[in-house]
Image 1: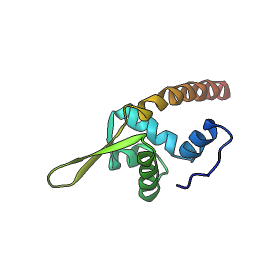
Image 2: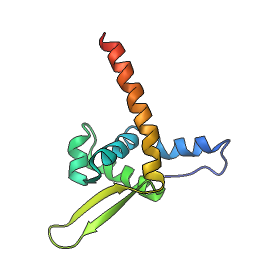
Image 3: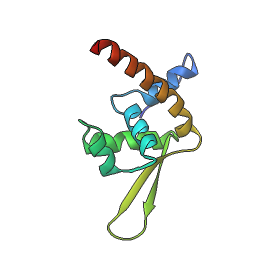
Length: 110
């Protein structure tokens, strides 16, 4: 992911890192599961393909929101988790957005 040289404010930078169709959903699913394998995330997030999932996970790891644990042995097994610093901090924002989404869905269904 390419970062611009200048930003008007820090919110722009955070938005550039987290924007995209899937990143916030990926973060929320990892939070909900605690740790998640690639196949679990792929099954939980309807419509995402493996290439896009791996690309977003790579970018989220690059900026310190997600990390991964590689298990020894065969078959190879990797689990993704939220980092203590940024990953768990962003959950507060995601939970607020989740609540707003629920409210709007309830209004639409009425």
